[in-house]
Image (cartoon, rainbow, N blue to C red; front, side, top):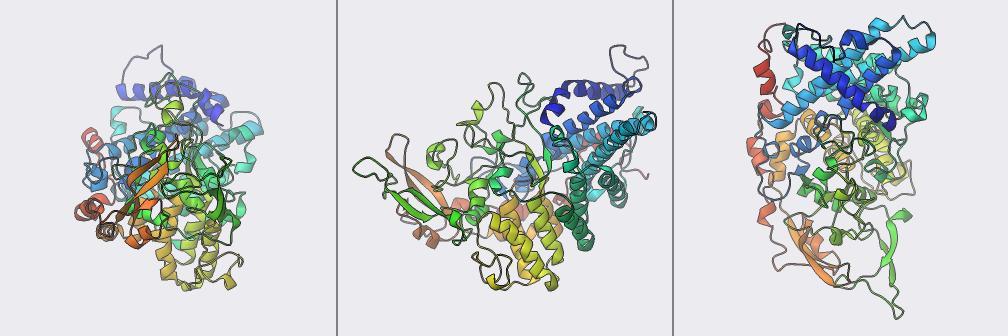
Length: 622
């Protein structure tokens, strides 16, 4: 599918840019060098080529705005210079002139414009192809285009102006056509639900696509999007029906290794329900930000090794990942590794061989696949040990692994000979997310104790994959031989676990604004910022072995939310004299957000000023 998408990228961009430019310029004379809408849409091949322009729009990084959406949540800190920042999304001081809402709005409506071209052209041509096979394929094209239009409007509905945005179900032909007023949120929702329902009814399943078509939107993806829509509106009954269908009616499964979901390894795997395809195989000569570029630049935003490190895991998330309890009944959590001296140097015997010891894993598999911690002794980072690969200084206690190429290169700059590029796909929806959303539906957001037992099953499926301690009583569990916390959960306590532990640990920095939308729909955004602003953190130093075998210290690289946790770490972690005194630079990290966040202004992105300036009828009555 990557090859199919990207081989057509140049033609697609010529077509879509030309058509869009012509509709905007309102020229009375036909340009003989351009492809007109009327002359292009003639064959099934034209429809397929046009559809690839929709996929090309989907890969625009502004569609999901991962960096800005997560800096806007409680999950990240925006770049170096901690604790000081001027990032308006982190500080909750953004407005309608800020870049993120302007760029996201533009990217989503570009996708809608392209989808509308395919939808209208397909509807005109259907019934003219002369054979059933081509007619069926045309209907699949229509379902894909409507599925994406539904997705783009779902993102607009959940992202902007309380869901009230302009609806376009046609191709603008003159200047006046572009001036569409906002529709009610109810009308927008009904519009995109109709698209997603059509897509669900008419799209193939993943198994029905050919092997070279992996990456196309599927019946399962449309079903998952419908479930998300109802969940975000608090309709747990309808959402549960769709999530149950995703779980039972398709061929999705959790990957054995959670790490299969975050790098180029195992792309389009059995857990992936919706995925954005990127590739390094095309357009190396283009600027990294060119619309026709087939690669991603998220690796440079997330990585400290050759990247810009535009966001780090938040301090609370760092502490939460560090403290995730292991299931010591699972043999994967017992590892053999070289024994360390107090100074961090690996011990050797008289023959120069490393002296090995059998010990518990440093951190959970989920932690090690998601973020990089300096004292993670059981994994590498860009071909080195963690403290060898990057300094962990300047109040940078952890970095992301997600979206990066840490497992296949020694530096992000070496991934491509030219420009800032990456081929890591973005997994938009995966089965683990569906399991956790389904669990939430079963307990109706924490109000129905009758669903606790079944909800625990799905949460524990996710936890067991990463070999972390399971929830509930072992005697009542699907997995009685695994270690459990032996707690009795109510709907309320299990919902707290989903909100503050399970979903952030499993889905950190993933998808379309998952954390931002979760906090808002739970009604806890302001409260969350206020709570985090009151927390204290403590630091210690780490001694480690350099590449040339010497002992070196990474100062204040270890973070904890309790000084006792620092005391319990190994002798390679040295405690400052004031280790039990909170480090002021991390106190009140969310203080500005807690003070600045106003639900009316910041719960949704505002309609961009670029749209308000260009559209004189934006707020007129339809």
